[in-house]
Image (tube, one colour):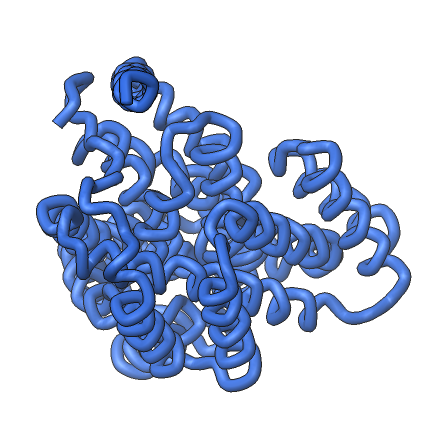
Length: 410
């Protein structure tokens, strides 16, 4: 009994030390970490989530696997871009609301700056043919990053046959059927399965990572001015256009369920057909450029904002498309913190976590299918996977190397 008590005291002390370690993570450090992540997270929302998992869980130990999977689960069923919501959740777990702001800003800024530059070049010089060649190298590497993340999460989360069955079922359903309704169904059914299977075996003590707040535990415009063009076209001042961009994209962001690709038709209907802010071809090119930049595909909103009101319009559209859903995410995360000690909820989360791993693996299959089966893509995929799993190479090196190979060999 004495040994057991000593072990409990040691574990409690270790947990406290871990929490104290989190207090040493400054807002500037969080911003720089996610800026680095944002520079390398090419290939869509699951790629960004996979890179976040690699740094926040494996390399820095700022979150547990359970924290990460809970954030993904919550982001999946809430409106808005899943990846940015997960980033905001991760920052919130470490440094509260300001940590969420620093993390989200750091993750979005690289893609925003790159797309703003590409937008300027596009409207001044026309289409950018190099983007396609760059992306042929990115896609196999992105698929490898996603599979590596699923593997690393699975090793620590799948502890028995029930979890393995849930993982395989989620993978099969999402890879075979797909869609937001199926995703939502997987979350709900796996949560119910968790309650039925694990309610009598989960720990009563909550394992939630303490939230740390403030260091304490608790092509055609030439050289003309784009803002001036927007003002002349609509007959209003640029700041009125900026306000209209914020309202339009902010309202749309709260209607987004199911990921950026699901959201594309709604954006097109409003910005092309209703307001005429961009042409149909420009909208298609905006989506293509958004795919070539790191981060979530909805960064394409910056392209549209740039066409309407220049750099200020790009910033306004970007903040509006990502901001409101992130606020909703944080409110729900705060509520989750308060009820996470519930035995029923903990059992449900234990069922949902392996399902999320299966969904991540299914996303990897989707990305792999789009890369095309040839010697080049297979070689990039294989080398990336070995580098990640065997040699623990940072994704910050994987993505640029793959992109450079795409430029040189195509």
